[in-house]
Image (cartoon, rainbow, N blue to C red; front, side, top):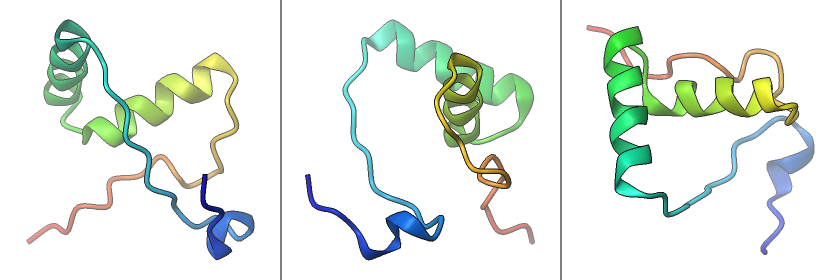
Length: 65
């Protein structure tokens, strides 16, 4: 895996993963219910599992108009 220069300073890395259709559907529904992007739902789940998620990373990065 290619190491990014930003990995030590809190930057973001691209992660692509295949999940079962039912899992993606459930993530999408949870995102709709909470009115948050799937990224936030996944980061919350990872944090709950004990994976290090930097403070402030669980935020909506979409631009609001």
